[in-house]
Image (cartoon, rainbow over all chains, first blue to last red; front, side, top):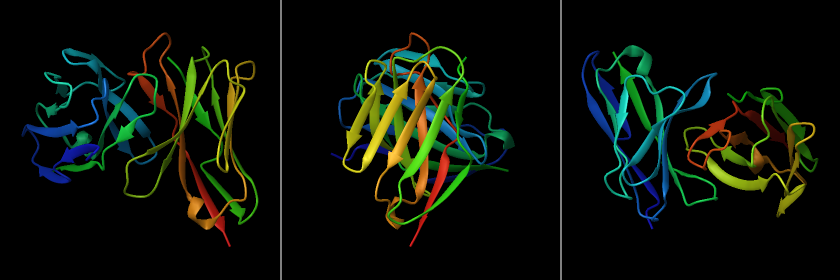
Length: 111
Length: 114
């Protein structure tokens, strides 16, 4: 199993650009989540999903969209990038009632 | 919403001693609580999950307790080693939530020196 795969690992965007961060898991996990991690702020939940076709907002959803058309994939879309979205983004997945498996992260810089 | 507080940002202990990390929450008692380890530049790694009806859980040198009266979980690493140096995070689900809505504390950075 590859686990949770995030692409790209690094990305630089200009303010106003849009992009999609990809996340795929091959463990048939029901739950998937996106977090951002900033110095001094810890991990903050952006969006999450409890199954294909079901998504919901976390703590900091503004400026981000998600969809879950399949169990395996959970892409995160930045609609119009802002410098405040400079962060490290983690995707994670879990089976019901178990701990999360995290990806290796995407380091995003918005200039 | 839930506020999660982890004890002091950094904890330094000598090799062989027991490290004790604290996670306090302020509002409702969650159905379970999780602990993760994070190394610099890496994603968190799941360590243990303890449910509200479990007072204590162990895994090798790790021990977690969960006191719903005190609204606190303690995470112990016995016989600590320099390789245990990392940031440790506790995480709680939202009230009445499935596992999907999981919130993290800011973590405690543990350094074990020889």
